[in-house]
Image (cartoon, rainbow over all chains, first blue to last red; front, side):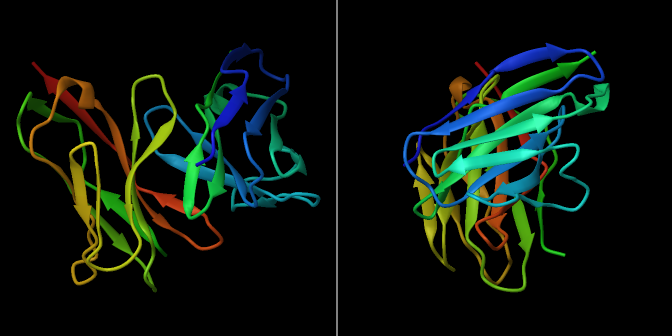
Length: 112
Length: 111
């Protein structure tokens, strides 16, 4: 199994600012992902965080808004840029260990 | 496209009642199927999974059987507890280790 931690656990931000969320896995993993869970809704995949190369974004998500880094096999960051109230969500990091996808506890973001 | 459909919630039950949460999927192949649980204020936890037809996943008294003929993966538990109150997500594999989630079903169990 993989244990995943995220920082911060929650934050309240002003519109127009940016927030970087960190994701740390306790073991080396090949695949890491970032998801968004808007209030009362299901999870939507934002992107696949690729180690050593640019992230692969899903339809509707762009690098300028959600830049992602993955400098090694255990760590990734997601930045939510130029935030608006519509970005208020839970952002979850996940990693594939074996054949199972494990999730971090999430970062609860409120944009005012 | 490939998708996952869950029964709408909320589902409200009394303690020790029988639980069923329906889940169906569409797929061109034979995906792996999962149930994740999200307790209040927490992230997602894998509850159980099945990787091929007729497999039964089970954990903490919950069970789900991979039914290829009906493209279903219904979650069941014989006797729910208050501590089972959570949101349950059905998911299928979507290629490249991605997951495609259903909308989630909120379960509320009352004493």
